[in-house]
Every structure is written in C-alpha cells, then in structure tokens.
Length: 225
Image 1 (cartoon, rainbow, N blue to C red):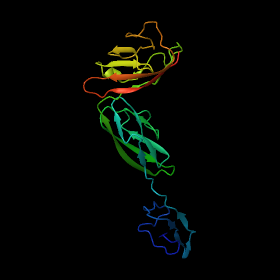
Image 2: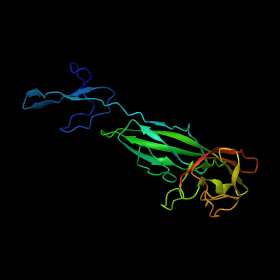
Image 3: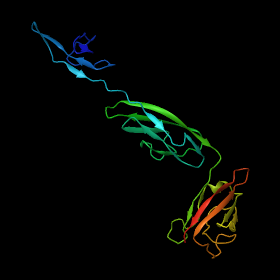
Image 4: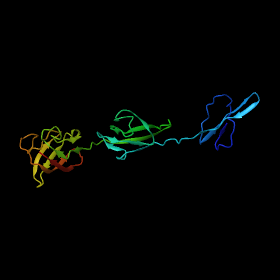
C-alpha cells in the first residue's frame, strides 16, 4: 500500500508479492505491507521514501559564449556533483565542472550532471566562434636568459603574415620596427630581431598594423633587463 500523507493508504495495483518495485513517485510517499496468514492479518510499519528534487544544471561563461578563433574560454557548470561533457574534442577535461573549450567553429556543448543520489539533468550551450583572430601581445619582456619572457610574444600574430610592428619610447621616438613579425624580438634597438644594442629598462608603446583591413592594435610594453 502507498500513501502521500502517511495516514490514508491505497492498495498498489498488482502489488501482491513479497517483493515490490514501487511505481514512480511525484512527492514524499509512505509504503507498508498488509499480510494475511492462517486467517491472521497484520500490517507492517510504514516506510517513508522522500522524493529528492531533480537537479537543474546551469552553465555560465564569462565571455558571453563567444570567442575569437584560436582562443579558449571556460564553461562553468553547477547543480550536480559529477559532470560529463560532449563532444569530448576541443575541451580540456570532459569530466570537469569548469573545462576550457577551444572550438574553431560554432560548437554546441552538452553537459550531463549527476547528483550523489544518482539523479541527473542535461543542458546545452553553444559557443560562437568569431573567425577573425584576435591578437594578444605580452605586456612584459625580460630578455635576461632565464627562459621566461626572453622574447616578445604576440599570440595569434602568425595569422597576419602581412603585419608591421613599431615600438616607441616614452618620448614618442621610434626605437624598433619589424615587418611580418612572428616572434624573436629581445628588446633591441633598430629594425632587426637582434642587433646587440639593448633598449633600457622602462615602459614602451607599440603600434601593430595587421593588414587586410584589420584594426590597428596599440598598447604598452614593459622591458626589464
């Protein structure tokens, strides 16, 4: 028998065996069994089966679900204890609640979240990929041979082979220029990657022209020798 208030019980259709697979419940329910043997009738103590709420999985993204091609963004899932993402390509960890994804085309990611009780829910989000590569110049250069920031890195600059990079000091005097830059500049003076004439430590300013109608990129660079 089953009840939803622990007082009024109704017989479960077909529930006449010693073992029972209870039907799905939609609220807290109480179960008990009535037994008859040799003309005697008895009722077992009732057992409460609480209904655990179904999890609701949500996914957030600090980049408004949009990235520039060649970059990564973090998906943040909540509402469960374990997670499984699909597709499993272009994702740093398909079992993490906070994986990094790096799609090169618009991609729909679906996550299955499961609670400790074994209840689960799914939700999906789509990452829109902007096909124009955004560049990210490092803002520090420390050419001291320690293996860190020894050369000036500009992420994604290789996708703009017809580029021009100019660097100016605080007096607006051009101290370095290079065409079709990829990497390798160690903070030297002139128009090559290595002249031996090191620029003094300090703040410099760059202007990067990417060509093909792309926007000009400007910013500050700190050199520490």
